[in-house]
Length: 240
Image (cartoon, rainbow, N blue to C red; front, side, top):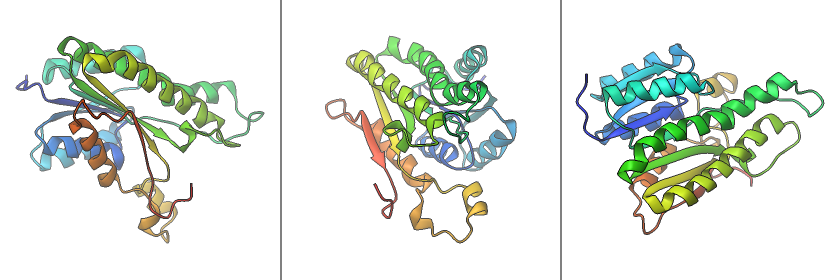
């Protein structure tokens, strides 16, 4: 069993870009970080990167849309590091298609990843934070959180719901000392997958994961006398 310091960050939906950047940012501040992702192959390189920098890390294969798996994952975090002080939901899914093309299974799968998983995660995190009347919850939104474009229903429906969850949660738990923030990521994040698909693309047209992670840290550090519920981030050339 690892030492429990009261500084535990849980990042659900970890990959080689934003999820890793957020986990590393909090680890550098002395937080023990729990990484959750459905695919084990995403977890091990991220775990190794944090351990190389001297961070305390727990890597857990967790399907964000499975209530039992999420509950068990948080139980493992509590047993190892203690209750969550920070929870970041970074999981999501998008399968393109028009309204008449989307299958019911696709619609449900995307909604679960974009919204339902966030609900499952925040329930567990809030169970840790509420008794102590402190904590930070950050939910990752998208352009589709505000606008349902043609062909993007599979993304927008879930992201609209996640935004509503953030608003309801902030109004319920903000007065209890828990900071809830919804971050609209308006643009494409610089990921290894994007670079392999568009090798000629200028980095300035994408969002830098480390820069987003820095904003997440700033949200956590905000005074409760000046809390942000929602903010939007985009690269300078992005049209909006």
